[in-house]
Image: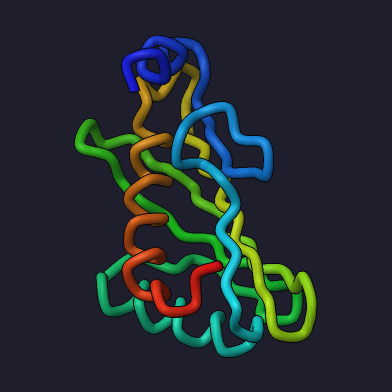
Length: 126
């Protein structure tokens, strides 16, 4: 975490992936169809009062907006994609608006969202 905060002096984005550099940023896969996961994810985000700016169900992309404590705005893109008809993966990309680094806030935002997703869909986690 300290390493990510130091890198955050210069970098203002973070993302999950199959080969994540930092712990906890691995792509999440669930044994549930994409449509069902989509509906449940929208419900969970609205329940936690997370502002959804744009959603495209056919593509599986959600864009949410989050304000940090310092007042900066983060644009977070959540992408759902089919691995097969009964298996879906989730990746998250978060970027801060502005010129300076994020001091690790995008990393923490992604970890918070993944924690929320993991709690809600624990029974489907692969």
